[in-house]
Length: 406
Image (cartoon, rainbow, N blue to C red; front, side, top):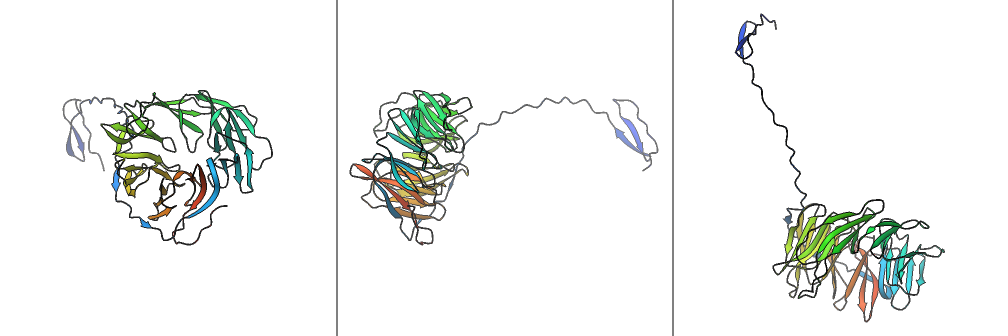
């Protein structure tokens, strides 16, 4: 294109620009004042809204769960993640350490036992001393002055002396101070060597159901090499059954709201609680692998009640079935929900839609412990004045036979 001429006259008045002899009117633009951008503060993190999905239509499993006795009389026990190593406080035979090589007595008595997730160490307490053993090692146990031993990631063990918390992982190394808190251990965070402690207000008198009610003022996170992390919850009114997700990111509790037990949850580092369900019965439980919670809804004196699953990552709530049980738990992996206590227990397989019963109508199941095998776990049931430790193994979906660990 050839320019035949160019003529511009004046700044504010219209001028003429000639292109190929065709006249085009041009007007100078007025100055525009642009306001500086305003930074909108990010919205506080929320858990909901939750979507209610259709219930899973569970079908009874064709084969039955197998129950294999492990120890006849135990008061307390702890088992490694894969189920290969455990430590028991017997009702008559002292403290026993059991692994693939067999079992042996390691102490005459103890008040508490704990085990590392990989089974590389066990600990038992007696008289303000913690004794750490390595299964298979002939060396004398390491002795720590303290109590309330809790295994963190790996072989790191946290314990308290008064209101001071310490941790040690290496033999011969002096314990390192984590921080100070006079509260109660809520959870050892999964995937990170951090311990979460709940600091309560003085407990209020028990309600009509006999449960003591209090309020948690603060969550305290203690981790070696890091300053203590304090999360103020600003809880008002009585509450009970506090629970923290395995990764420490979500806190839930049951509150008394105008005569109804209401389950409320919040992002740990967010602000404010969100209502999840009302007329909640019992103690909601988090999985140890994924951000899932199970709880029951119904009247305390009118079983059966509705069993629900809350999946925080997918923001869904799903009804699983009707149960008469007071205790709930997840098996490792978060794909099996167990409802248990007096009578026959139920195991809901969220992947296959099968429900399997275990035990009989006269059993009184009091505790469960995970084992890494799919559908397998340890459990104790009351037998007169003591408890029997057993291993429960679910049948595979095809109904073929299974072999329980020795």
